[in-house]
Image (cartoon, rainbow, N blue to C red; front, top):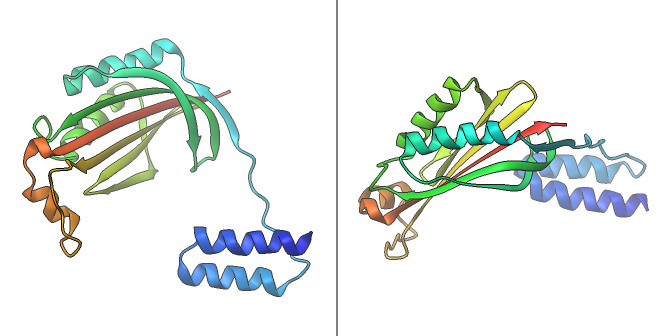
Length: 187
């Protein structure tokens, strides 16, 4: 059984860890037949924030974006803490006609959340031409904001051209943004 577990770890480490790290990690595990795998932290259970708190964020997003924001409850996984459960999910789609760049979306949403008492958590921060992620905390709650951008099917982006160049050359209505905000609290 230990050999099978080690084999799974070797395979998983090759998938999840970058190149040289995966090789050195998997070699270390494989060279120690009785090695025990690192213990995984059990996930924290979370649930959607209170309805009135979610509605407050929804109203803020609606005001800032000047768009109708949909609200649902969705499955939530937070790989940073780690946490699993459900979250209040707010979502909306728009185009580059309303917002020329991702920065034009994330800046106002960041300010709105800050005014509501949410504090940025840089562990979530990531951005690029095709999206941005930001995280915020307040007491025992977390908000994860995910902005994904894509180009309309009518835009042809050759493989030898950087994606950022294709975004710069696209017409505003050919840039599509999907904004999803998930808010959960620890039980």
